[in-house]
Image 1 (tube, one colour):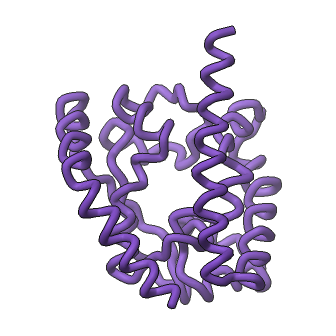
Image 2 (tube, one colour):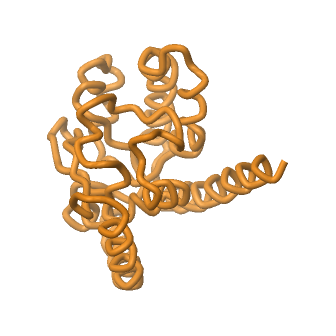
Length: 206
């Protein structure tokens, strides 16, 4: 049932979103040099690597430095990328990952191998399900960049504070997962994005 829902929902989103996707691609090309689609190796179900797709939001080769973005104002992020990240539009190409069976709409967000290698045996259970476009952790840490920006050592903060909490939420999801839980998380995600952007707008006004 979950897989059927993923396929049907993704097809609808992709068909409706193609015209907008073309406009976004044009904006990316005009804004900076490089490919429209950014591919990054992530760890999926059964500990198998796959190529995750995103609209490129950073300058080419920006990922050769830190893999953690500590601010929405990171100098590596392009002008178009700032807008795409603000509304999570950069994640749109991952509906292709979902159609390919590499991801689900809801499930633990896929990590890079560097961090997966730090998982405990219990935390490795998150790799027994397909990774997702959103999850409980995405909602709780919708402002993750701001948290990391306030840290003296963003890498350590992520590894020792944020990542363990995310994994605990992912394990919770695995225990209670159902189509209705997925739908709830999808709506909670939309609400979190809207609320965060409204808070940012109010701060700018002040």
